[in-house]
Length: 122
Image 1 (cartoon, one colour):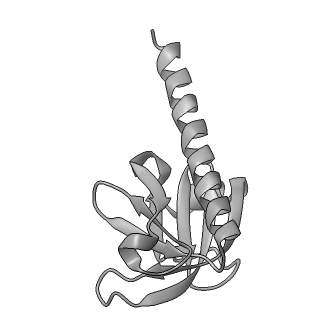
Image 2 (spheres, rainbow, N blue to C red):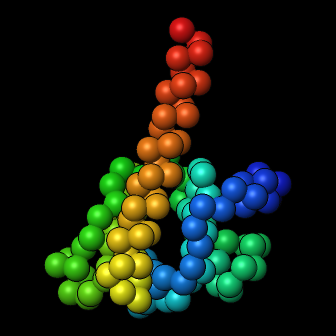
């Protein structure tokens, strides 16, 4: 896992600070988010790429969208996976939209790459 992660982190598409709602205590915690071509990682410290607090494979994300009505907080968005929903908050709307766009674009690229590989086996 560590070797795959180190290899994956050579393909960083976007990184920066976001707040993530903890699943247990529902408090908001600042995390360094790193988006690669296949995975969204969270770390406790900026550019310290070891011991991720979360590892979300892009292939498991079903939806990503704004959720201010749900959280009653500005600049929030959520990522739905089969196992859980991640609630995230950025500093401003522009940053929120940039993250939603970057993750969505990475998901599409990954899906297209997978379909290309599937076509190779036909």
